[in-house]
Each structure stands twice: as C-alpha cells, then as structure tokens.
Length: 404
Image 1 (cartoon, rainbow, N blue to C red):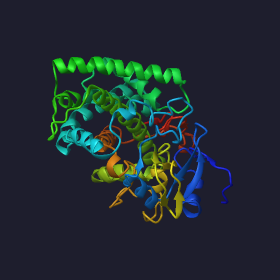
Image 2: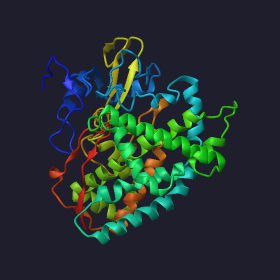
Image 3: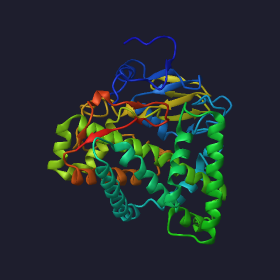
Image 4: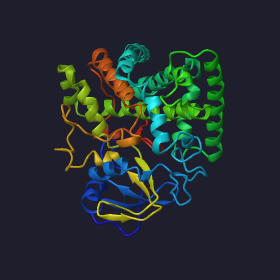
C-alpha cells in the first residue's frame, strides 16, 4: 500500500465491524508517523506502532494541553471536543498537581473495593438478563445489558439515584460524540451535568456516604490537600465519560468477538478459568476502539525516526499498537489464553485509565453471568452484518443482535 502525500482522513474506516482498518499494518510497516486530518479539519500525527505509542503515553513532555493555541481540535465544535473543553481541564493535567489528584482518586479504586463491588454488579447483570429473556429473542444485547449496566455502576459509585440514570446516559453520549450534536447541545449537556453535580455535591456534604464522591469530599491528602468543588465535579464527569460508553461498547464488542467464531465461546464454556485472560485478549484484539489518545508536544521531540516539531498534536492509536506483530506473537489471532498480555487498551504512564480495575471487574462479571445464564448464546445475524457505531470518540457497535 502506497500512502498519498495528502493526510489520511481520521478515524480510519474498516470494511468489517470487527476487523481493523486495512491501513494499520501498512502504516506500522511503512509510515509509523502519519499525517491525518481529524473530524475538525485540523491536522495531527498518527502513531500506530506499539513502541512509539508506549513511548509517547509514558513521556510527560507529551501533555494533555489540548487547549494550547496551536493544538489540533478533535471535533469541529468550538470547544474542540471532550478532550479539550474547560471541564476536562479543571483536573490538573500534569506534574505534581496531577499526581496529587490522581493519588486521591486511586486510593478508592483498590482491588479490595473492586471485589466488594462484584456481587452488586453480578446481581444487576442477572436482573438485566432476566428482563432480556422475558422480552424474548432475538434481542439486542447492547441495549438490554451492555448499555444500562455501566451507567448503573457509575451512578452507584457517585451516589446518584437510579431514577437519574437516563439523564446520565444522555450526558455521556453528548459529551463523547464527535458529530451528532451541535456546539449548543454539547454546551447545554455540560451545563446541565455541572449544575446537577454541584447540587449533588452540596447534598453529599450535608450527608456524606460511603460512595466515591462521599469519600472524596472528606478526604485529605498527606500534605493537607483537599479537592475543590470544581475538581470534584470534573472528577464525577470524568468517571461518567470514561466509564460509561467505553465499558458499554466494550461489553458488546467482547461478546460479538467471542461469538463471531463459535469455537471461542465453546472454549470458555468448557473452561471458565479462561474468563480473565479472555477479557484481556478482547481488550487487546478490539479493532474498533475509537480515535485513541491525543497528546500535545510543546517542544521538538523525535518519535519513530521522525522529528515532531513543537506544537504537534499526536494521535496515539492504542488499538493499532495492540495489533503490532513485533509486540505480540500472532497479533492478528485472538488467543484466549494469551499470557503475558501487555496491551495498551487502558493506556500507560501517568494518564493510564484510573478505572481500569473497575472496567475489568465489569467485563469479567458480565462474561461470567452470560456463560452461566445463556450458554447457547449466539449472534442473531452474521458477524459481517453487525454495524459500527459512527461518530463516537470511543468505538462500538450500533447493536448486538443475539439469540439463545
């Protein structure tokens, strides 16, 4: 494949909903630092090799300062998208201030805490499967299970009542969509969410609970640091944006990947001990992971044999890096027992996903429940007829039709 002089349109498209874009392998081989045009029309540099993506995500010179004057906007909205708007930047983005904020939040996401959440997640998954079975088949697994479960978990974490779940779903969609909403609609969704969370925080201060926000309100760091209301609202928003659509879409894609080759599902039915490694492999194998992670460089840096000038916005495609043959043996094969599996689905370095332990818990729990409850589960349409969900920062499928 010969690449044109003009930038490629990004995100890259694929002919099949579960297969990677044809350009990935060629880009890794021939053009590891490629010029791309983002949905905004601005230009960026795309990285597809494992070693380069890992280098940039681990290098603090590559920042999240996407509000810089010469940084590329992701979307055509005035704010530039979810990565660069004001509320995202309310959380310290670099240096000791970021590490201090991150330590405060990370203290909550312990293995012990995640284990304690699992029974509740399992019970909710069982109830959602009950309702899906009662409605009859074929069913849309995404609408019935994959979409409602993570928003229930996030609302639970934030101490938000179930009755507000639909509003949280809408806000999540509006803040993550690249093309569906106007700037006015995005601004309105953000204002509504901020107003809701500000009021919710005031109620929490009066009666703190044992949920994440309740604990962060009263938490004090070793240096006396306490989060401001603005940081607390931004933290809640970050959890919603990062933890809802991403996990909802990954549940749907994981099940679709496993059912697209029936032998994978049968192997898990025969050996449930593979659930944990199968989840990790689904995360690595995901060819529809969205746009990746943007980074901004304020000084000249060399990556992949190319000197990136100051002011460059870099798009790190973790999904393309996860298919790199130099990092993973038989990278284009889904090996359910792959170990070790140092994939980059959750990023790496100072900005790796804070909620990855929670996401893993949800994915493993859902897979366990489906194997137990619906061993005959199968796709209700051929895998090639599944439809990609277009326009989201995170990749997904429009629906996952199943029967059992």
